[in-house]
Image 1 (tube, helix red, strand yellow):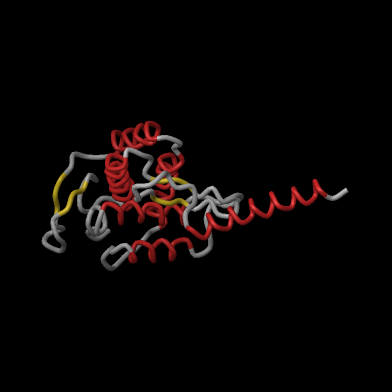
Image 2 (cartoon, helix red, strand yellow; image 1 turned 90 degrees about the vertical axis):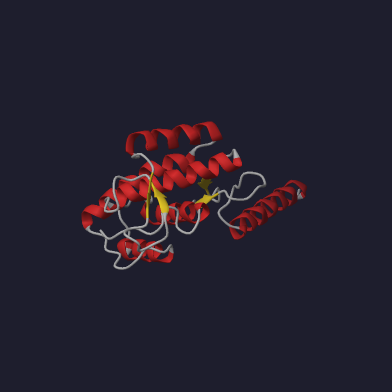
Length: 196
């Protein structure tokens, strides 16, 4: 593997969003263990988040990244800040190395890593850098750093970066769709109750 981009993408928020985007690709969906085009989609996400070329993911890398995604799923699924903190601490405690600054031999600006080396396997880099970014977000907001969309038709992981209340949906579109469905359901049940 070539030198990774900055530890946190261009920012903590960028690295946390990268984690959510990778989870959206790699977490198993009902009845499947891999999706067609999964590797290509993963490479596209890593490139979109600034990974330098070449971005090459072997079968072993893909298997390791799937396992890392399952581990990170626990952080995104945490229902409260204490549980999210405990899960992040457990992952960092089991996998992270002492923090170090690197510029990948002058190929990038100085940034922080907690993986074993500049040539660490993709899964180690992804898990540790994602945990570090999610930990910073948790400390900044004093709230869970992410979640899963509560829309039954979605379930996509998302990152909590705003200062408002904890998000329930991955996007305004999912939130609107669910509010409209709830409104229609309430209206339909009211009209059924009125009809003799």
